[in-house]
Image (cartoon, rainbow, N blue to C red; front, side, top):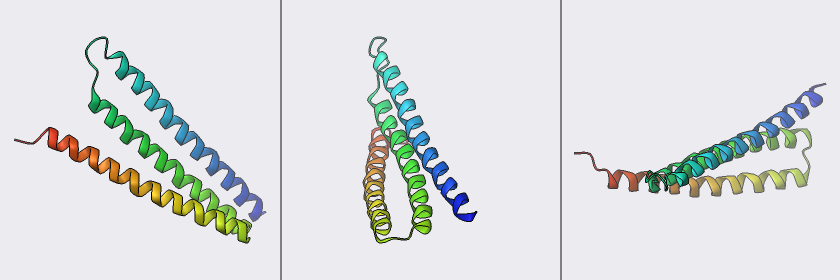
Length: 119
């Protein structure tokens, strides 16, 4: 009974992670096309592109967090060598991706701050 519940929970969390990532991609695609259409009306902005990158990064990181939670539950249910290796690889990849995405986000924010100094 508990095993079935945890399996179902892991599956639901996996689906949620996919939906979060897909939603983030859809939102960013819509923002991208709006910004590109702004070229016609002279409302195009590179700043908007940077914000889209930040938004997409946030959705990706959140989706990856959910995927790792799902993998942890699955590893608890099936604590085999292969599952532990897979979980370790996922955590390492997510951590590396997170570090680089956070670094990039900080650089974008710093560039925005440098471009718009407070008087």
